[in-house]
Image (cartoon, rainbow over all chains, first blue to last red; front, side, top):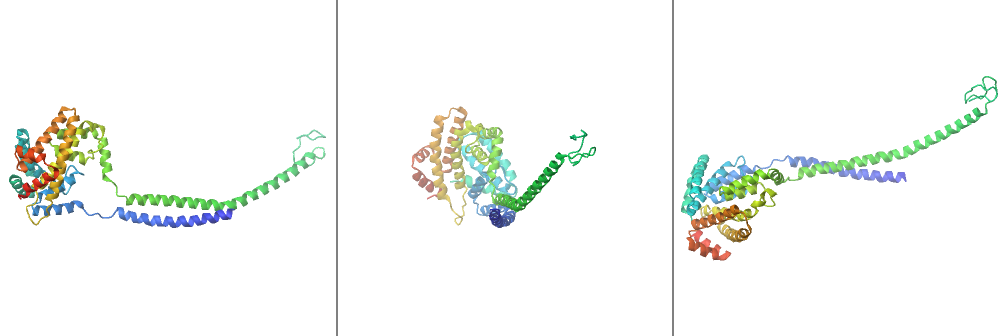
Length: 139
Length: 250
């Protein structure tokens, strides 16, 4: 009886040892996966942003901005310029809405906001002029 | 014990009394008993050792098996953890639960300033748009309306600021379709929520969103009040066709 139990246990030990070795190898692989180098999404977003600007595709910039804002209300490091340009475009869009609404308070607060946002555009100052043109001439 | 003959105290193992030389019958019996106990002890000891020899291999195997099983479980748990792509939204949700009161105040401030798209972006970024904590209960109806307002304004911005480059990807038709869908949804939601909203301030926000959206349509779709009323009375498909004409200058 004892011999049979010993034999069964030995078989189980061999099977478990094989499984353990497989799991061990898997675990070593999992560390490599966890520490893998992931592509920097910010870098990719900035290169798309530059492409959109080349084509004055500010609608696409807005789309990226709103999508990114689902995750991060404030601009994540590396893509602050996308937020600045999109925030300017949104304020410029709303300026004509407030004018149509004849809402004096919002017209003045939005104008101040536009000035402040224009100051933050840095190297992308030219986008403000392009956006203003598009908004002014729409539809 | 006491010698039966001379009544002196003698040891239990003394075969004869050291004082009078009389035989000690108890010592003989004691010696026989001791021999029997020794034999029994040796037998038991041997049995125990034999049994231990038999089962010691069993116990060692069982211990090895248990250690290996624990190893399997631990390595599997570690690799599962490493392979799992952790949901960053979990941390955001936990943060929102913890700071619900201050986030509700911040959200109210956006509404107060009439920044309705900011309000929705704030809720989305903190995972508060659906199943928000009870601190947001009073904003639930206004959130339903703001969600559709946000989608409409977002799509209008994308349409108005689309690339003028004819070779660039043109998603205008899709944007128009989506806009018309959200516009229908906006008015349906507005009607439903206005009738059940008791808070005057929230009602004012809803009406302001309606005014702003209508002002945006008049401005960017070149419509006066009558044209807007006509446009809003159209079906979703006809609205889309009308917008294609306006925005493509067909």
